[in-house]
Length: 171
Ligand SMILES: [Zn+2]
Image (tube, rainbow, N blue to C red):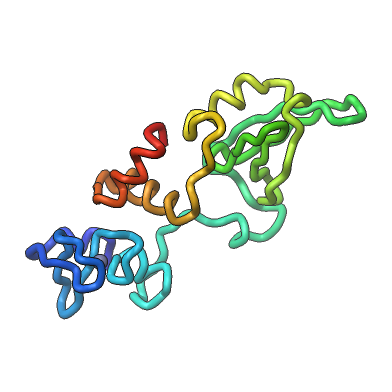
């Protein structure tokens, strides 16, 4: 089975969330809303569907010291002793804070916090990190990110997605 099974068959209304474009798959309803318990994504995430997960490896799911970013971001950093260091971070995980930036780095897969004024290629890093949220705007919640990433990946949409997308037009 695959995520695209719901593209076959006629459209029905999801009995759980009321989405109008759910699909019948055998005797169950597959809902396009990724937050709905009838969605293929939810079924996979909960393990109830029995399918293999296609989600990218989370840092916590791979052994320490072997984690590699999917979109490497090279951060040149001068530490408090004046020593230059280079970090390879996951671009997708980079969050700008007021005086710091936090990013998941290889090879540990752990999130570290760096002082912005010690990042040597800050302009480059900031441009990447800040393009997804407006200055001063909160980062989307994990659920919002799940919806944003799901529909972006599958090139689909939903009322909920449009609503979140309006908040994060550059996501
Ligand atoms: Zn639903």
